[in-house]
Length: 182
Ligand SMILES: Cc1cc2nc3c(=O)[nH]c(=O)nc-3n(C[C@H](O)[C@H](O)[C@H](O)COP(=O)(O)O)c2cc1C
Picture 1 (spheres, protein in one colour):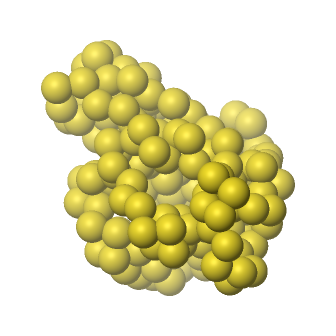
Picture 2 (tube, rainbow, N blue to C red):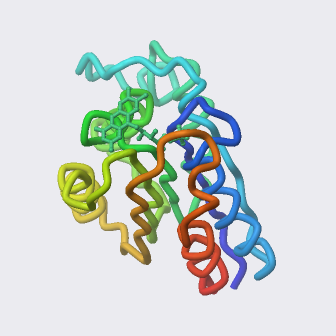
């Protein structure tokens, strides 16, 4: 069955390592007839949640953040959420974290998002996978809380400059997950 897949990219670097991971996944999954939407959180101006609890009071999820409200329209159609992101200070980049924070609006507004499955594609400069422990723990706890079935995780350490990931097996691993998505 064709699915709506939303791919959020956390880096503002176009053609950067995590952007290429997203593209590898998208190209492969699209061949299975799925609808894929890529949305670059890293270049948006999402602001942090201020816990005002006025979510949906004026119809939109957030009363202050047009970028999140644009994203919300995509979240509301997604069966599958893919987070493709670099590691920043051992966790999500703040723009992507701000987007995740604002999913809180759906809890305050007592509404349910249709997302059922999720993937994490991530990369960082450090050589070992230990550096990703915080990000992985955060991601798994969020997925558990939201009821997202984690369908795959790709971690690529040791990549720093744009395009370094081409010298690893990371893009092939992302493509393999996309191919398997049925
Ligand atoms: C603000 C910032 C923080 C970073 N923090 C980490 C880190 O904690 N651990 C790490 O391994 N790499 C860190 N990096 C390096 C990036 O994760 C790495 O260069 C990655 O390949 C960038 O992905 P991109 O090309 O998709 O932007 C950081 C980079 C930036 C700009």
